Image: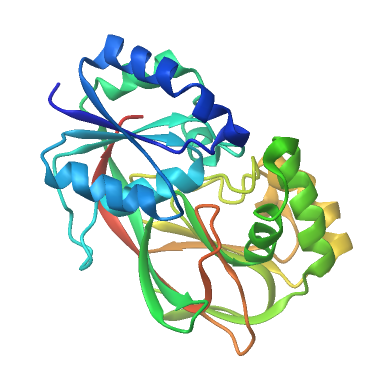
Length: 305
């Protein structure tokens, strides 16, 4: 099976992963043979560790944590210029986070043994998204994403969720969402898809989706597929907080496209801009704001799914 590395976020699962590192490592070695184990120490560290083990010849890198850890590890699979660091290497994931939105696109649970068994396989060719955006310090940054990138309410909610105690478990998303709804107002946004204006005017949220779920189980892009070479673009109209709450059941049920005013299309290149400060969400993290350009890299990752 070649060389395998575990990139473990000890703070995931409200810190319980730190207490289970030995158990996770022992089970991984029982299923996969010898594995190299690295633990993250700060935000962004998983990207650095992934780059190091891939450059050292690892064939499979397994993220142990939540959606944010998945995102950091996936970024380690790409060089600064966006080219693959190790084109034949596999990306695996052991879900330990609060949200678990990436695994939901495949109908997967959190079972350790099942995730390890998947990591034994050759991996499936999977698309990766790339986004150029404005960081909080005003500089332009590039970042890969595996699941969903979006702007608007999701960015505000991210900011609130990340400041909410994960001791609440999945309820952290609910509490953070309530805080975000209270603080949020729709934004004037222009969205272009493959060079054509798709939306112009007030919007609560716009996505560039590779996967289906975000926000702890909201199916915001039910038509998205991770291997079709396209991003699903969903724009929710300029709803206020009360209207968004009223429509939220459609998000969880996968029926959001039935709500009045919702726009949906697909494309390979998505541009979003606004005269206002609009916060972004990239795989559950909040690294910056618009303007942003999203593109898709078709079947660029081999994912153990």
